[in-house]
Figure 1 (tube, rainbow, N blue to C red):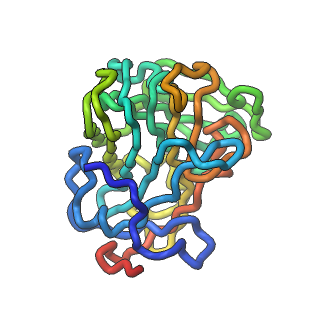
Figure 2 (tube, rainbow, N blue to C red):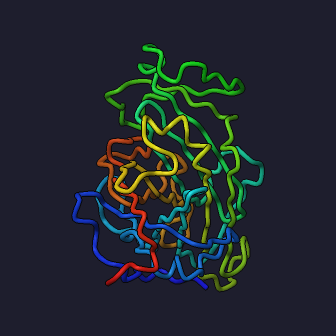
Length: 276
């Protein structure tokens, strides 16, 4: 089930974007990205260390597709001992081995985390300087909030942002499939896969003047990353400094740096027409 080899769907787009997301015809969100569209889609490079850019010791890749209703993201995660413990939605999934998706909208961005049990953590982040000049007027979802100016030793030059922790993406679909067994040490595992479908209607706050669904050639910044809580020897890492791997390095141990996210170009061409 788990296939981590990069798909031969052509090089990065010549436009300067990091990735060209093509259209899909039929995706079933069941956690198993085995449709012909996913087999044609070009996978990301192997995720690399957030700071150094060195490839992670376990393989992790992602791919992006879309249609007029949804943005689709798939993850392929190599893991010889699949573990997860967080079961409550919006609990601290980042304390488990997880994969993460970030979608930037300029004045705000969306964060989604998933572990091997399929537990979700979501947050919608709004930059405080944007609030100060009236951006996203009327956005007041209530509930729990968090203030953040950076992660670890890194302080973002833009300053503080507010995370709305009880905000849920309307219409989100997510599924996980494990090639092995969760939390059974000694049992042979290969890893797990994730499929996400994010409605374009739910991204209206992040469109920033762009059409939904995208027009041909539209550009968005999105990041796919992974945090690994156990080292190559299977021992638990520092919970405040696990291994962090992403599509592109950020230069700091901070996944909340939208200016470093890969540039995704949307193409209306079907992924089935992608050529090596």
